[in-house]
Structure formats: C-alpha cells, structure tokens
Image (tube, rainbow, N blue to C red; front, side, top):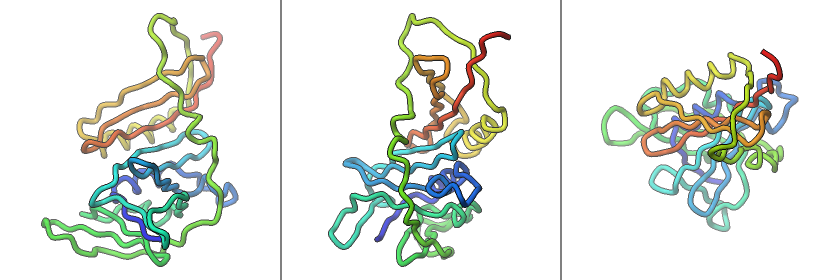
Length: 200
C-alpha cells in the first residue's frame, strides 16, 4: 500500500485517538479512500476528528490493483510529534516518510516506523455526525467535559486559518456537537459528545 497525505492533517488526527492500546481501532488513524478524496478520521470514544482531503499532489492512495478501496489504519504515535516544515507524509513499506522543507523544493525530512493495523475501524463512525439543527426548532441546554473542548480549541487555534470555530447542533439535546474550522481550503470537523442538562 502506498498513500500520501498532508502531514499537518495526520498530526491533528493523532491528537484524537484513544491512549489505551486495548481500545484497538480507536487508537488508530483511519485513511478511507472515497470518490472525491481521502477521509482522515480518528475517534477516542468521546471526541472525534475527520477531514476529507481532495485527491491531488499531496493526497492519493494506491495498492497493487490501483486506487485503494479499503481503509488504511495507521498507528497515531508516528504523527504525535510534529516534524518541522513537513508538508506531506508518504506511507510505504511500514514507514512514514515526512517530506517538505523551508524552500519550495521538497525533500525527505525524517522517516519513522509506521506499520498499518489489522483492526477494523468502526463502521458507524460517519453516522455519529449529526445534521445541522433546523431553524425555529428551539434550543436546549447541554454540558461537556472542558478538557475535550480544550483539545479541540487548541487545535483550531494552532492549525487553522483564522482561529474561528463554527458550531453545529443536532436535533436533540444529546446529539453530538459538530465543530468546524478552515485549514488552507480544507474543512476540519471535530465531534463532541454532550450530556443533556435538565436542571441548572
């Protein structure tokens, strides 16, 4: 399998995996080839991240039959620590090669072991993301763990064009909250599971 993906997107995704190795697939980053790009996804059970990266010079997946149609599950550890000036990562032969540099000329900056996982990524992942709330349907109160919001806010502050977060609420008080931000033409999507508050 050969894949290339923007380095910053993999770094962001690595912040949203579970730390417990016994949690299997949700300790990994999923690269899912789709018709118009690769969906990069990572959940930890409470918060989640996804981003559709359009196919192009920094984004493609191939296997022996051509374009891949199966998800590629990568360990998060190689991407937790950011490689300075890295623009893209090439995944091949159980190695993650970081490519970039200060100048326009792209060069190899670093290589790290990165053996894909055999776990199965949760099939229901995309169904967790709610549709936006419709106008005129009222409002409700909810609560969430502040440390999860801090993780999302820190990522948005450091890795987006203007540090602005846009929020979508679902149809019910306990629907997941979707938070959106822009990164150089890409839409970053974060998910936060709320707890309904019946009395303040």
